[in-house]
Every structure is written in structure tokens, then in C-alpha cells.
Length: 306
Length: 217
Ligand SMILES: C[S@@+](CC[C@H](N)C(=O)[O-])C[C@H]1O[C@@H](n2cnc3c(N)ncnc32)[C@H](O)[C@@H]1O
Image (cartoon, rainbow over all chains, first blue to last red; front, top):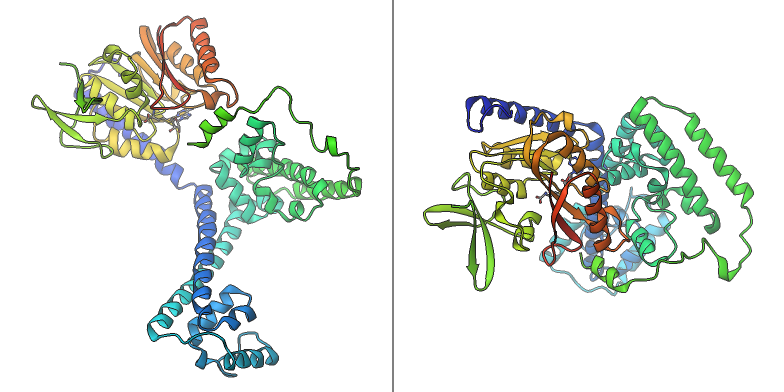
């Protein structure tokens, strides 16, 4: 390239070759199944948010008309399904409430609530909008279900060991945070342990506050169901095993049931060894606060502004 | 006439680079005609090289006709201005390892500009981009070991007496350390490797805790 002068035919040929090679690399990277999986799990989490927002709005709006029903049907999606299908209060009857998993008693209670409802009347126009919103929420829940199944089945193919150890959805979220299976596979366990808790980590580095014990991993049932004093240990163990699982998935690609077995064994022994809460010594709970890292409010401010 | 120009807009200096592809924008920047030639405005809040120039770095550091190795091309915002500056007789070899941003770099910058050669590669492995000696190495990769990476590239690809421009983001090297100290340490590393550091431009108010180190080999 040094020899060929910019603008010459030779130079242009080299340039085109380089562009083609770059595009091939990019294309290959974007067909990586782990990157698709990362998008899928993020779509799942997005859909979950939309669903919550939509269902909450629909139920609040409908609550002006039939507040008692909102109290009686706790499941948001079930509620939206009723609203979308039955509509105004006068539509509630033994027949229309049939086949929704309600007991006879519950059906009678809903009908009774309808008769003495404190809700106001609702116009055709308002009702039609609430029904549309409710139908959207129902549809979103179907989409969410589909994405959830998809993430589970893809994780089994793409990262079976992570799926086994962390659970499919949590594993996929870790992959998303890391930026792909390849990135997750080179992260140290200590980083995996706190993926998703970056804010708390930086705060702790700056101020000497205690470092976070877990980020995304808190969602794992072994962590959040553990008693508080065991949680850090459980999260650390889990992170260790996920780090191993990620490496096996990335470099070897085959299943290794011994990782999960090792995890279960370690979790058992933590439960056993740290059965009792530690003696409370109010001065020395957790790791000691670090010396020599005084708070620097000026710097802290600077970071926060970004 | 230099391919970098300045315009005064109510007391504020606006940098311009002579558009290599007249009529075309790269990222929605304004186009300005000056003495019959088209220029693209260059925003120092989006480009650290522009910030360094406004902080006093001479325009001539990247000369017309120069060959530039650009590490960390990202989507190509700054690289496109470097392509303007070196002009049709110069070369910008852009290296970026993240496929997602590299895609934009290739589409919007490399495909459009006859003096830009893209590589989707890791700057830690210069053997992956077949470049002969260059006049300037520009390095903006925001990695903790970026100074080592820059030095590796200089030792392999920078011609004798060539220029290194190294962007240092103190937070990506050490979150806790005082930025001043990080800059001094990175500077010392370059000097130890035998480079002559001419100036360290601190980039505020355009970027916080950033500096651009200007050195020659
Ligand atoms: C701060 S951005 C560069 C912004 C760009 N210079 C501009 O002003 O338009 C850093 C870029 O370096 C890339 N990068 C980081 N490490 C790299 C490496 N080892 N090799 C190549 N590119 C790298 C990142 O993907 C990112 O796009």
C-alpha cells in the first residue's frame, strides 16, 4: 500500500478489497447466534415493560367505571382479557364470566359487585379505547410468552452450560450485559458477580462504601432466597460456576453436567456452614471500610453529570 | 490554502474542514461554502481532535497528503474530518474492532471516501491490517492499556520522525486517580519508549478528564 499512490487504480483496488473484507467480518459478526439471543432477551425485557405500562393504564382507566373488578382480579393480563372481551359493566353475566378459571363463588361475587358498583358510567368512545388498550396488553403477553420460550430454547443451543447453571433468562441477560458469549467467556467471576450493578460499584470505589454483592445475579433464586448473610457467598459461588460454564460454552460448546452438580454441592455446604446468622458486632459488619479513599464530593459530582 | 479553516460566529470559533466529497454529509454536520469551496463544520464537543486544535494544537500536525493510521475509528465521525484534512493525496487507515460501529464507519465513511481504508480488527494485533509506514498514528480506543497498544503500533508502523496523537481518557485508565496524574504517567510511558512529547492538551471544556498527547517518534 505504501507503494501505490492514493487515487491510483492500484490503490483503489486495494481499498475495495479492504472494504469487502471489513464487510465480510461485519456480516459474520452479526449472524452470530449469541448476538441474536442478546437481542431476543432484551426484547423480552422491553416487552415486559410495555406490558406493565399498558396493563396498568388500562386497569386504571377501566377502574373509573368498575373499580371493584380491579380489586377482585389481581392478575393484570387476566383482567385485561376480561375488559377487552366483556367491555362495559352490563356485559358481566354468569355466561360471559364462564371459562376464565373463576369459581362459581367468585363469579357470583363479581356479578354482585357489578350491581352495587361505585364506578361511574363510561361513554362508548372511552370504553372502546380502554378495550383496545386491554387487547394490546393481552397481545403483548402472548408475545412475551413467545420470546421467553425462544430465549430458553436458544440458550440451550447457544450456551447450554450457562443455561443450566444460571437459568436461561438470567444467563442471556448476563450475555447481553457482557456484549456476547465471547465477552462473557473472558470476564473474571468477580465481574460476572456484579454485572448489572455498575452504578453501585462505582459508588463504592469512589466513596469507600461497601461494594455490591450482586447485580443481575440477584434475580437467581439461590441468591434472593438465601438469608442475607449467605447471599454474598452464594452469589460468588454462582458467579464462579457461570464463569466456568461460559468458557466451556464458548471454547468447547458441549454440555458438562458436572458444573451444575458442583454448584449444587457448594450451595449445600454454604447453607450448612453458615446456618446461623453471624454475631452482630455493629462496628465490624461486612468488610472494613477502606482507608485512604476519602470522599471526594467534587469528583463525584463531575461523574454524575455525564 | 489549508484544508482546515476557522470562522468566527459571534465570538465563537467554528472549525471547518474542506469537504472531500462535496454535497455529502457524514453525520448531519453543517456545510459551509467559503471562497468557492465547500467545508464541513467540525464540532469540538463530538470530536476530541477538534477540541485539541481549539486548545492550541497546530493545524499542521496532520498535514495535507499525510498517511494516518486511525485506531478506534468508531462510527467515523472524527475519521471523516481527518479524511478531509489529508485530502485526495493522503490516506486514512481506520481500525475499529466493534462490528456494530464499524458497520457505520464502512458505510458512511470508507465507502464514500476514496482515501479511507477500513479494517475491522483489534489494534492489539497490527499484523491484521496490512499497512506500510504512516506519518501519523492517531489512537483513541479508551482501553486501560491503550498507551501500550499505541506504542506497539508506533514501533511497527510509524515512520521515523512521525507523529503520535494519543487520546487519554483518565477514567478508562484508572477511575480513582487524579486525571492530571494519569496524564503525566501516560506521558512518561511514551518518553520512556523514546518518543518526544511535544505537548499535552487538556480537552476541557469540550471533554472532561480527557487529554490529547502530541508526540513525535
Ligand atoms: C472513544 S471511541 C472513539 C471515538 C472516535 N475516535 C471519534 O472521535 O469519532 C473508542 C473506540 O475504540 C474502539 N476500540 C476499543 N478497543 C479497541 C481495540 N483494541 N482495537 C480496535 N478498536 C478498539 C471501540 O470499539 C470504540 O469504538
